[in-house]
Image 1 (cartoon, rainbow, N blue to C red):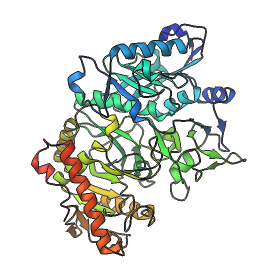
Image 2: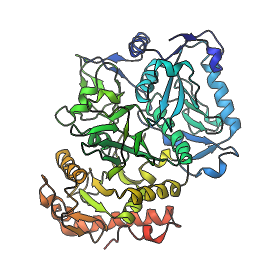
Image 3: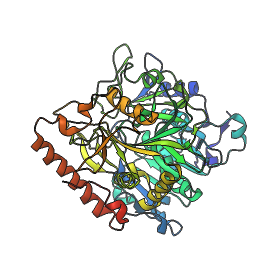
Image 4: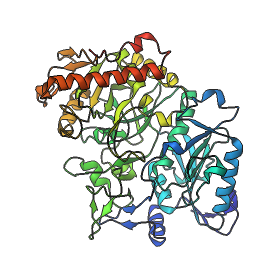
Length: 525
């Protein structure tokens, strides 16, 4: 691709700007500049330094008159003034003078009716490789007249001065919805780029009548798709990468009147403890063209996926077509099944439970899980969290906007909804092993195939969810966590604690939620 001048991007100086370099060219430059090393299979492996996960405390939205009334301001969506944004942008552009830059022009949104065009300008070749693989890659013809809807500037080497710039640290992720720009400073962690795109789409898509979702999705031979909601580490990527189904995408999707479409063109999988026998599709995708973050290599260049000395949030990024049975383009029909994934560290939620529509709305809004170590900075052991819509850091508008849309979709499609606990059952985290992946896969498979539609259910008196009495290929005694706890009194005490946490969170965050949703949660008795 032809070299462009830095001034085209508002950057003065003598550095070169490379637009849409090939994967081999980006890997070559990253190696020459010492940004990373190759694994034995040819993947580029890099370390991201201090920031090995997202830094939610460093995220801001520019408060302008155009967006002020649309944003749900608070601890998650922090405002920053246009003046501070312009000042930081100016300093970032000055910092980049004389440096080589790498530009990727790509698409977000596999359905062409709703596609947004992103131009990503990177200081580092490895980050440009990342976004090249994570977004949808335009054809040569589409690049000829490419004009971005949004521009992202990522300069991890530039550090903010909190006292001057109005930030919380040297890092900052700032979205300006009015000028259609995103600034990412001070963090080498590639996930900040990916989630900035998602945050933009979560503002744009509802205005088109599309529900944006933090979920993975796949499609079966019957033509019905399934979506898997959940926070990072709960199993979205693992469970959607099913060799018996076609993968639509592993993390971000839109739900339109026509069905499901992938927002991305790639996957960003956690790979701590990765084993080929458990997750062959992900394991085999880590070859030349893939990017590994913070994975330790042995002297032979082989990844040690068990080594968490840098972080537990080790990551592998690769294009979705590295998965053999990927659905290209990433589009599917209306879903027949919706799965809410949680990793319960209390060990009291059932491995799988069916939800009626009101229960589904309650759990969608609540977004419960135990935040797993490493996904965000400062998290070193599982901790209880309620993340609205299973992705609160990425949704700029009020939860009711997205929740109402989901309710409408469930009513229109009649999709079955299940709550699946991929965490612990029968005891708290640290006292019992995590739920076997083979059992979780069997339960999800039964839900997707309709095998759980006609089985008998018990209504759990504490959590107010329907627990199946039987499930194919799963021992019936593990379906109800009460049966697994050696001390029933200890189970009841822990279950009631979690039920109270659900209700306290709901009352605090959603005091105006309709009663039919508010009353569909845990009963605590």
